[in-house]
Length: 240
Image (tube, rainbow, N blue to C red; front, side, top):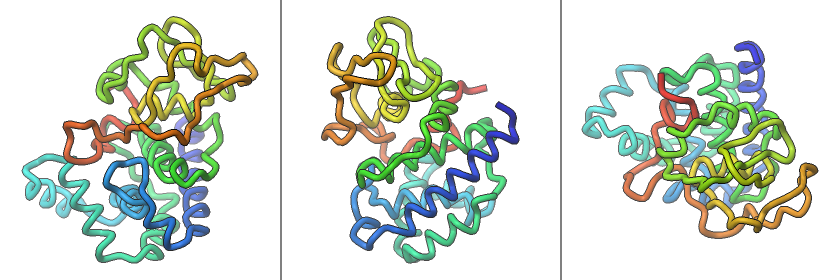
């Protein structure tokens, strides 16, 4: 996969999200996302934050948050939703579908991962279609053990194999799941299903785990005050 291919996927994912958001009602914008404490609109504010602030504003805000990015991101998302309407947040995303932003050390894959993961934070609780499985697989194929540890995920000797794309995670007893569900598990949003509860054949049949069940975790670990820094862990790449 070339950088140009990843860029095309990133642009396509932003366009897809903009189309999804354009169809939401006011009640859906106000619905809880997979990020605990954030509504759909806070997630959109977070996704679009890099497009709307410069380096000086970023570092000033970070300093005021005592250089805790999670605290800063939470404050910024809440402040942005207080001053911007849902329509303005949507326009910020749509106007920047081709924005060149890339997270530090994350590269173009980091930008794609950021949008794919936060896209699931929006579409999953609203039970809306997610992005294509192969796009999710691009993110999964870069997932390492350090990423799982960051989110407190222990696969316990299991290998999660995508039933709808070319990707797998971990080693051990095979469990077949949709790529989307594997990414939600890898980022701590959904729990690892019990052995046998979601085993499926290679055609993706017989998977019993529901992606809309309660008990999922968002990307914020319990001991964290805000969402994981999108410039680091959410791109699911081993740190350089």
